[in-house]
Image (tube, rainbow, N blue to C red; front, side, top):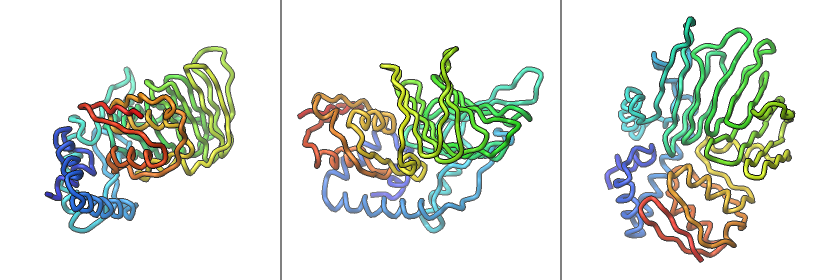
Length: 324
């Protein structure tokens, strides 16, 4: 198999037809599967051992720095850089992510919108030094510079924030259901508009969560606590969690810790951009614990889960049907 096909698969740039052809090739023989796994392990090793890649800065971003996740040096990296160069000049086409701008009236402040494609992640450094990691299918809007007393951003998706402390300018994250207010802290927000679940997980510092509807009470969150709101039954839960489990996605790891299969399905649908229909009610309540690389094909994840709770599945185009 041409190594460029592997690289393009790992970087999320294969067409659906090319991806299907690759997965069919993997399933065709055990030697093909072993070759794929060897290349994936090499790629993962390069990714995990390259924390000091230079930041990519685009003039269209103003004072914000945009940093795609990239690999280390070596022959693979040389090939990867050629592809990355295409990503950098093709923001508007959405090859890596798209970035749009709008200018505020009467002010030289530009609003930047980053849209992360399916299966990709990206890293931003905002004008105040705040670091932001964005997960797959996330839309993030932020100004090219903050005012002296206001730092407000908008999020539709999942993001990890490492906010620079500033007592005079609170940092405010606006989502479709809640606002998260901080002075300086590290926290994760899960807030996709098309998901009934809103989550904020606090690693350090303190955050204040306020529902968007007027008159609603605010909630203070402390380290190792997670706030969960379910829009279907309007239930709110604050619980102690292992925060490391909610940070692994920025390293390219999907972590499920005693999660019901119904919740796992939602995350897999979003990350792999597929529809998963479960015609096995008992399976939805089955709880699973495991970790996977974000580069693992979806069938690999399903085949691991079915070792612990037997089920079958079939693929019909962009849809997966699971049954007993």
